[in-house]
Picture 1 (cartoon, rainbow, N blue to C red):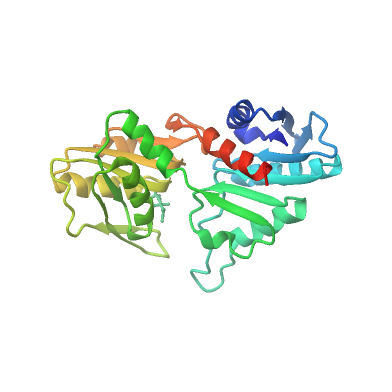
Picture 2 (tube, protein in one colour; picture 1 turned 30 degrees about the vertical axis):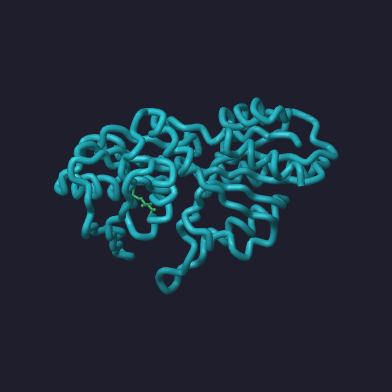
Length: 295
Ligand code: R5P
């Protein structure tokens, strides 16, 4: 197996190559003056099984998706035997249903596009909804990094912290964290207006007074969900509040607004490289690739 080091995840790809011992293939990328993208694989992949590691987070997620498709096609053109993709943050995964009349299912379009480019296997991390991968006509798996995030807090001395899901749908995430932390677990209610995107949160029967609470979510985007959760937690007497997520998109001034709301720290993974990407997915991805390689 060889690792193709996608431009959007080159550090993560190098870490995976170091852990697994798989050779990494660098990629030259550039943007033409007219804005079109160019990629070139700088290594021999003929007859090889290759894994492209490329996240598709903002900014410019569409360009990252096109780079991914172009790298897959380049690998096929160069004679790769099999092309897999590790896409830690999978763009458009939240558009996995027809919420309003007239919409399309964007994530399905992306998957078909990647398949057409030559991708024959897909590994992602905490995809927003598992249904986004149902019906994908090739191997596709989402693995969870929540226990790795929870372990980070245990290492920092916050074992027994309360794991909170900011909405009921994320309760499975909080429960996964609780397995590692060993403290309490609960969730807030959240209702989103499908037209404005505005959300409203509320708490029922939370027992967080005097406790350290870690809010676990798959994604932090604008930060609105975490800011709302922090406000409720403070009102309910939580002593310390932290935010943990797999995908720290942190759009605009999201991080500042979260910290201003009394959250002590934001901990995310390198699915989205940035100042809050404190936990690397490399060991988790490496284990998955080794397991797939041995099948
Ligand atoms: C939604 O269901 C997700 O799990 C996250 O809670 C949401 O995407 C976070 O978005 P924001 O940070 O904009 O509130």
